[in-house]
Amino acid sequence: MNKVNYAKELEKKIKEFEKEGRRPRILLHACCAPCSSYCLEYLRQYFDVTVFFYNPNIMNAAEYRKRVDEEKRLIAEYNRQVDEQTFEGMNSDERAGKIEIIEGDYIVSDFLEAVKGLEDCHEGGDRCTKCFELRLEETAKIALKEKFEFFTTTLTISPLKDADRLNRIGQSMSEKYGVSFLPSDFKKKEGYKRSIELSHKFGLYRQDFCGCEFSRQQREREELQQGS
Image 1: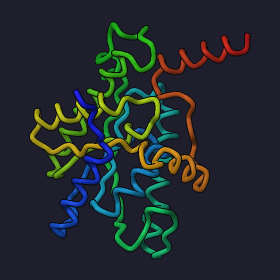
Image 2: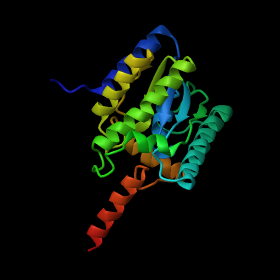
Image 3: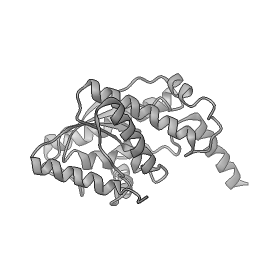
Image 4: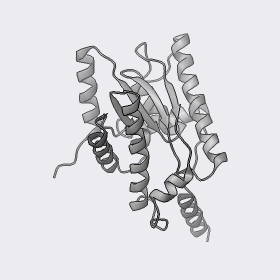
């Protein structure tokens, strides 16, 4: 089976919209501001974007609050660019529109229930699949409720995340809820590199683990092994 090039699939979709002369509404699940930075810079040229910050996997309330506040700060910076028409960067121009945000429910027990029995899985394994399913299903539900044409996620920008798995989960949620999933592999086309540049530009808080307690514990074990 040939591997799908999701970056090219995204470009094909965008060309269709441009040919039709329209800007669809899209709900973008966001995991954090650094990962959102490039995704928003790119997508706001072609879509009316609303960010959905839904991450019950984040280990504690203080960490969650820090990440959601950074997301809101980044969005405010991008909206200021629109107000002032002072665009900077390779994917920012007069086509850029303002960005809105919806903050999802922060209920850690929902995450713990979803990954029950998989707590000891290595990062990137079955536990992560259940976490992706939880977050993308909630995104699809909100997209349906609020009448968005598309939904997608920033998670594909990470070199540590399997874009094929995320796109397959997104498509399954699309079929379940009847809202189109926008394919993506945002790390491609220098996307991940650009997210690093934008994180430095805006001074964004960059965490060194995915968010859940199990991810943090694994990172601490790896650091101890490296130091021994």
